[in-house]
Image (cartoon, rainbow, N blue to C red; front, top):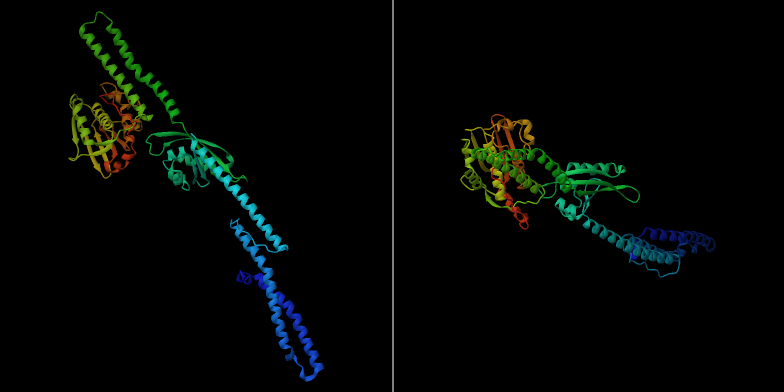
Length: 505
């Protein structure tokens, strides 16, 4: 403490000032007295006679100046140290005050200020913790997703529902850009617009995207609003997301159901009713009765097939059906389908070429869904090919992917129809002209498309009118999918049950 006091600039200034104040008059008086004594006493008296007295007085004055400067500087240094400790947040620090003068009273005021600051600090921390816990409890129990971002799009807070949708915990997400966690252009543009124009208030948008590891598309109703500080300065954006997938599915289902009833069910029902009325004619012979009965049976089968396919797709889209994945040899599945339904090609004198490797081609998939996929593509290729043509089925593995190709030499698909062939109830514009067999439902390829997506794959098509069509399905190879087995829930999983035998597009 002594070294700290004597090293301060205040101490040096006080010491030198007091020393000079004492030495200057002393020196002047000493010189004056020396001169007077020399003139009175003669040659025996000189300045040297006063030198010991002068030096002794200087030493005494210097010691007095040092003692006084240190005494005055020590409480100032204590006040400085106390102020520094309090500024650092050490409110328990106390400044020693052993005097009753102004400096002592100032020290006691500093100590009182530290006590009050500590009390206020404890109150603020407790309040902050309480508010934080309250905010977290609200976020955890909200049914909607909440994402709070700063003005640069970095995540500040997440609700538990938003964590599930993003597939990441709040601790992992905080500080990271939202575009890395959920790269949806519509959502990012909404948040960016509010961040750049906070005065515009709340903005809304509807976002259709995938969330987390869910293969299905979800529809979110998003509302973004700016967050302001106490002085009305924008600091971030809070976005509330409401999952309206079910509502949109209900609306879409109503529309599709009306369309199916109006366009798809009316035709077979009209045919059934017409031939049923003809059967009531007592003049019909046995051959005509058998013919009409066969027509009614065919139309009834087509009607049941249509309804079953529609229900299958609806269950997949609603998430009620999940794949029961196991290790499946896709080569064995294709061989079984081609063998069981060889009659489809034989009826039209179509040759089927089956190209596959000698070793198994394993995938992590639902076996029955893979059977439905292969049967749909194979039956389409046969159905929409003229008699005497060739249908080629290829299977192989390239790198980390397994591919399945079904190529025909059939009627082909016009370019304007290619973007829509996976839509429900859609049939190519040239089908009615070329197809002389039973009319397709327009649901087979939609079913294939959903199955491929559920297994994390993709499907592409290339076609040329009059020359044929090639469908290519790509699925992850087993070695990549094996890591995900633990993520596939096996409890409460509804097994896929195909309801039809003949699949067509």
